[in-house]
Image (cartoon, rainbow, N blue to C red; front, side, top):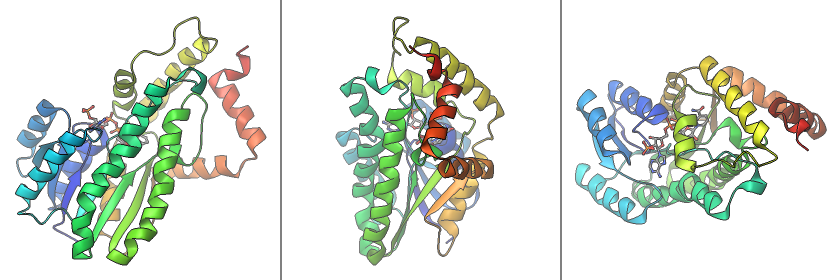
Length: 281
Ligand SMILES: NC(=O)c1ccc[n+]([C@@H]2O[C@H](COP(=O)([O-])OP(=O)(O)OC[C@H]3O[C@@H](n4cnc5c(N)ncnc54)[C@H](OP(=O)(O)O)[C@@H]3O)[C@@H](O)[C@H]2O)c1
C-alpha cells in the first residue's frame, strides 16, 4: 500500500495539514485541498511534492472545479485514498442554535463530506480498489451538553460510514473512521470564527460558556499533537485489511469506553456538573 495518491480535505491547518506532510514524507502522492489559498501556497512551498487544490466542501461549484483539477493532476485516474477531514464545531445549547447555524454545521461536516465522497469514489469503484477515511471524533460516539450540533454531525458521519463501508465493500472500496480525541490544533478558535457569535450575556447559559471556554483551553494545553492522528491515518491507509475504526490517542479510547459503560443517569450528572449546567436555573 505504498505510493498511493491521497486527497486530503481541510489540509490548510491542523490535523489535515499535518497528515498531508506526513503522507508526502512517507512517499505517497498527496493532493492537499482547502479553502484558504494562501495557506495552500505555503504548504506547497514547504513541501513542493504536495499538489494543492482549492476546495470548499460545502460549495458545489468549488467541488466541481476541484474534481476537474484532480482529474488533470492524475491524468483522469482519480485518487486511491480520500481523507474526509474538513470540519468545524458549532458550540451552543441546542435551544439557542438557529436552524441556519445547525444547517451550516451539517453542510460542512455531513453533506460536504458526502458530496466529496460521491465526487471521488466512483473512480475507485470502477477500479475496484480504494479507501475512504472519514474523520469523525470521540464526539461521534459520546455526547456532551453544549456541543450537541457538533456531536450530531459526527454521529451522523459515524453511522453513514458504517452503511457506506458495507455498500462499498463489493466494489473493493474500504471505508474507515478516524476518531480523534482532543488534539492540539486551532480547532476551537477556528470553530468559533466559523460559527460566529455565541449567545449574549442574557442567555441563562451564559455562565456555562465561560466555564466551557476555560475547560477547552485547559484541555487543549494538555492535548497531544496531530502526529498521533497522522500515524493512525497512515495505519488505516497502509494496512492490508484496515480496521473499521481508529481511535487515538489511546487514553481517549479508554475514556470513551468508560463513558459508554456508565449508566445514562450517571453520565448526565457528571457532565452537568463538569459544564456547570447543574447550576443553571
Ligand atoms: N482538534 C481536535 O481536538 C479534534 C478532535 C476530534 C475531531 N476533530 C476533527 O478533525 C478534523 C480536523 O480538525 P482540526 O483539529 O485539524 O481543526 P482545524 O485546525 O480547525 O482545521 C480544520 C480544517 O478544516 C477546514 N475547513 C473547515 N470548513 C471547511 C470547508 N467548508 N471546506 C473545506 N475545508 C474546510 C479548515 O480550513 P480553513 O482554513 O479554510 O478554515 C481547516 O483546514 C475536523 O473534522 C474535526 O472535527 C478534531
